[in-house]
Length: 120
Image (tube, rainbow, N blue to C red; front, side, top):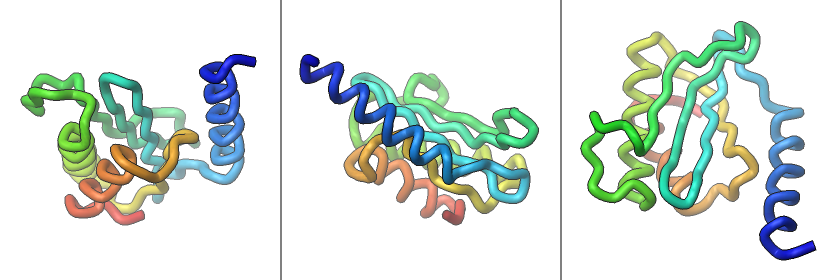
């Protein structure tokens, strides 16, 4: 198995393990994070109703980002998703890092969401 396929398989395994433990409820929805090479995405999801409460990504033109793949973009997305979640009445969430390490852009997104008022 080549190195890239092995990385994908390992991330999928980690993600399955996380999703066994994490479930988004109406009182405490799930903050799901996905990071690609160019962008970062975040959604606040109620799994019981199967709906997305709030979302933000580095592709949003309203954030006005010059660079979409870095730490600054992750912080802007974290702050934006926290503000949109608070506007929808959500203050507590569970972090679903999607199999990614809690490091770099994922950590910066989470820290920015915490600073903007989300608890997790």
